[in-house]
Length: 107
Image (cartoon, rainbow, N blue to C red; front, side, top):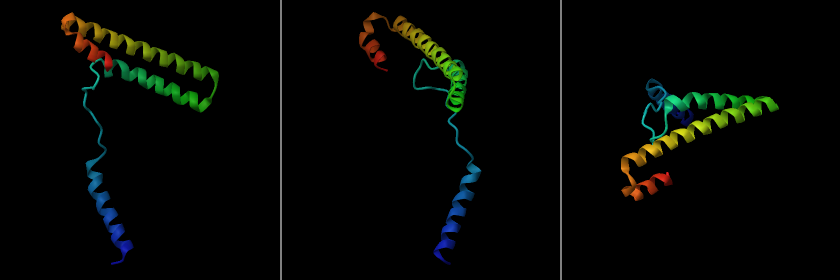
């Protein structure tokens, strides 16, 4: 057996072992940021990404303005989610947990 044949056999063995596993997709619904809402933000991200691709592809001012519009909507919703979570956090913990509040602001 030549080295080329051995390489081909090894490559084929790895491919055959890999294919049944399929593509691995992270389906964990828990995010590292507690304020992140997939249900709310995913459609906004999809719209923004579509506007990004169109802006880069067409390079016309209308597409750029549409991208900025979607980006602003996304940022506004993100700010609302963070603020809401922050107010809830402080309401539950109270002012006596200032150190926890400080740690929360670092994230």
